[in-house]
Length: 139
Image: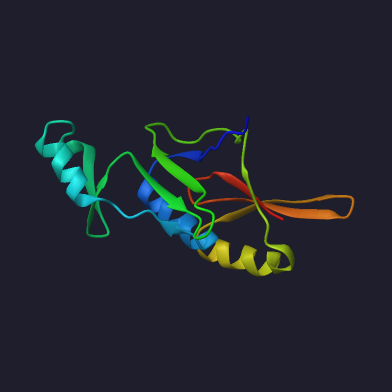
C-alpha cells in the first residue's frame, strides 16, 4: 500500500517562511479562506487570537502552506514557540542542476545562508539554511 504525505516545517513565522519558500521554489502559497475563518470564529470553534492578518489577508495564526503548481505536493509551515537550536534530522534536497550557482546567489539574496559545499565522487551539492535556519541542499 502506498501512502501520500506532506512535509511539515516548524517555524517561528510560518506565513513569512511560506512566502519565502514559495518564491524560492516557484510554488504557490495556498490562499486563505477568510469566510471560513470568520465563520469558525463566529461559531465559537476558534477565537480572534487564533487568527492574524498577513499581507492584508485574514489567516490562521499557526500555519501556512505552499503547493507545487502541477503535482499539488504540499509543504506546511507550522508555528512553534521554540527557536531552532540543532541540525535538522531531515531536510529538503532541491534539484536545480546546472543552475546551482545562480540559485545559490538568488537564494542568498533572499536571506538564505551557505553552510557547506559537499562532494561525494562526481556528485556535488550546496547545503544552505533558509532565513529561520532550516537546512536544505541544492543539487
